[in-house]
Length: 285
Image (cartoon, rainbow, N blue to C red):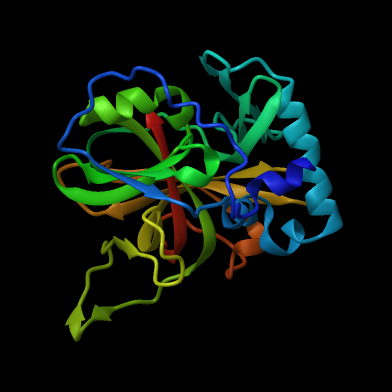
């Protein structure tokens, strides 16, 4: 099986369940849910552009980077399970990179997904864990609340190695970032007949992707930096305010990657209102 097939939707489990070991005592207030769907095709479309993803060159690029990633030393390790990562070329002066992570069991690649590292950390309270049964329960979406105030869900990029901690520790510190699937300028001035301020920011579950980690959003663009994936495939790491709290400008202001192909606007400006669809990812800090 080619590497490219690992992020397409899996209908049947071909992965050995690696969770059959004695775990830490589970927090019974966390609801465990087993789901048999979930894949990373849309997420890779967000990374390299949907048109490019569906081309031979896009498939070749991802296969090349997955193969390269598999040769890197593990960034996280738990017995036979290991998580590896590789990043694309970074622009001069940029201190954050975007790339991929892969999950391996021994020498076998089990999964692959885009990865945007971040230093942005928030306190998080877990309410539900959606384990992917079709990937041997080694991947999961985590749903809960940030700062005891706002709710959201994220795909745990470290779940295979840290799953016991997710299940046993309800209160965590997590690093949160996002991959945007589409981005446009927002001209919204009112909602339901009520005027909204220039600083209005919000997000809600996606109407098009019924998963707990995808959201439609309106945000304020705080900053942006160009990133090269290849010479002709470029994008931006943007800093977006998703909740406006005058007392704390970083209340929920996340790093997000957007591929230029998926942008419906030609340029970005600091302070502009933007809208689109995002996929949250996170890991234990």
